[in-house]
Length: 196
Image (cartoon, rainbow, N blue to C red; front, side):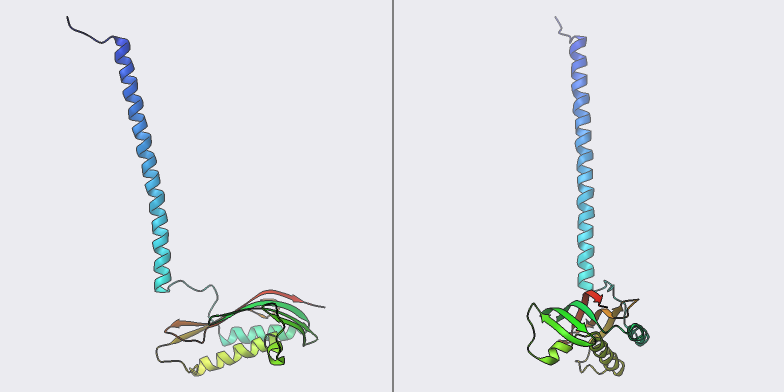
C-alpha cells in the first residue's frame, strides 16, 4: 500500500517553503543594505585619508592680496574704532595662546594670555588691531620680496580674512604649503565687540 500525503500536509509544506524563501530574501536584502552602508563609509574614510596625505584640501581662508589688506585697513581706519574688547586664539609652532584684550581710547587697559596677565608692556600691546595690521603688512612685504629666509624648496602662502563691516583681521595664516619651516603662524579672532 502506497502512502500519499494528504492535501493538508502538502499545503503546509508549501507554506513553510514559501516562508523560508521570503525569509532568505529578506536576509539577502539586509545583507546588501549593510554592505552598501559599509562601502559608503570606507569610501568616505579613504577620501579623507587621500586629502590629508596629498594636501589637496583647499583652505577656507582666501589667499591674501595687497588689495584685500589695504581695503580692510582702510575700512578699519574709516570706522575709527578705538575702544573694543577682543578674544583671539594664536597658534605658532607648538604654542597655543588664548588672548583677551581690552582697549579703551587706543590704550590697552587689560590683557591676558592663557588667563594670566603678561609682565612686559610690549606683550600687552602686540595684539591690538593696529599691531595686527602691522604684522600682516610686514609679512606681505617680506613675501613680495621673497624674503622669509627659509630653506630652498619651502613655499609659503599668506591667507587672511577680514570683517567686512569693521575691517579688523578675523583670521590670518602664514601657511607653509611645501617643505618644512618653523614660521607657521595662525590666529583667529573668536570675539570682537566695539565699545562706545
